[in-house]
Length: 276
Image (cartoon, rainbow, N blue to C red):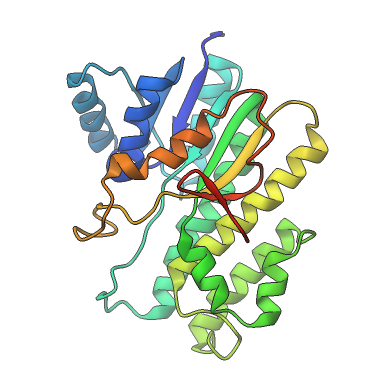
């Protein structure tokens, strides 16, 4: 078993994920794994970074496939005995002009952005070593969509005692309400992406609370972050930020010094805590 430190970035073959891998290769003392669903695209991304003099490693990961997640889990456990940094970056978004029915957009978006991210956390959070760092890439769209929800839903999502089970039921209800065409009547915002990121932000708050209870004194920090509006395939060419600029806050959270107590369980944008 290696004593080398290890970081894993999901959805690392392009965009913000690739920029995070690049930044970690320069700043993190240890092995950095770029993961991607498609092995060919992942290996091509690794080779591109190697041409820049960096040395990332590759492991296949499809966050929508539990077996794929468990394969990565077993590999990390066997080779490294645990995990020092986990950045949950993989996600999807439908373009504004996409004509896919909203019910389908809701189901597909939440499946990847919320439920698959939750699956990753279930399998990999137990491997996080003392002083480990977990970063769930969310979005300011979570705050914006929350503001458009009914006061009742806002209260539930802002609750300091909401459980993971309650959150899952709410996310499932959004999908069901979208399928019935009643999501707006039920107090939801009209953004499937924004709602999925509400789920990620609230899940992060719950996870941080649980870590404080179950692994007190181990110095683990878990936060959600917004990378900003970044020029990627997902966000389009008109966004103001480069992928490198988008990677700054996730990388900052991944490299928080061992003795830092804040931010913790927060939504962070531009390296600052955003009130939830």
